[in-house]
Length: 111
Length: 111
Image 1 (cartoon, rainbow over the protein chains, first blue to last red):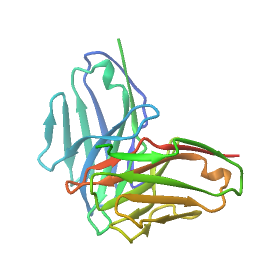
Image 2 (cartoon, chains in turn purple, yellow):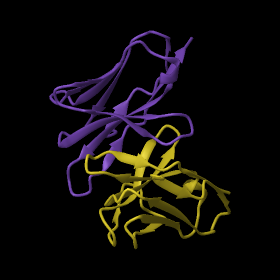
Image 3 (cartoon, each protein chain N blue to C red):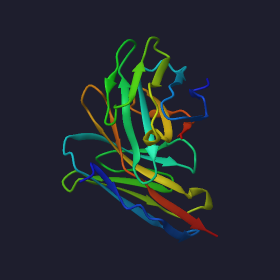
Image 4 (tube, chains in turn purple, blue):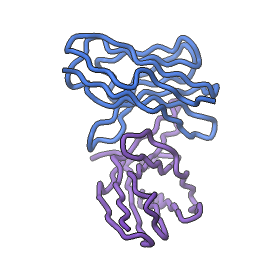
């Protein structure tokens, strides 16, 4: 079983739609959680951190459920520019501060 | 600030050849990482460093070596390239808030 699992998609949605991605992780000792965005043939960039109480940044909302070991990302009012691959990332808080990446969920927003 | 830079951007090698990928960061970060990204597999950690003069193995270290002689530089070496090492290589450094900043990547093809 992969340590971080995501539905690869693609999710094909019209502009203005609301779309949600889920991600599950296997290591209950995981301490920090993130969503990264990766555009085609580009490097990943941090979209947002995920806090235990949930957090919102504009049209983006991230939630964490430690009991069920999953993380979610909700995108409201999708824009064409939201088309990208969204990577779910967990961090183990040992001395290495290693990030474990999911394979990513691809989002296509159509006009 | 240039952030994280990588050289070269592209390279084609023949099986058995050697090469070194250079990663440089100007953000004074202690932690640096080397990943490879293959289709459908997400980013996998090759080696990482928690400070100048230190290195450690990640998930897929075989066939690679690294050095961190200066805080700002993290070198990844391939001693004898194999076709299985065809991939996109990303370097990253991490700040105190646990955000990783990635370089633009090196696209390596081994024939």
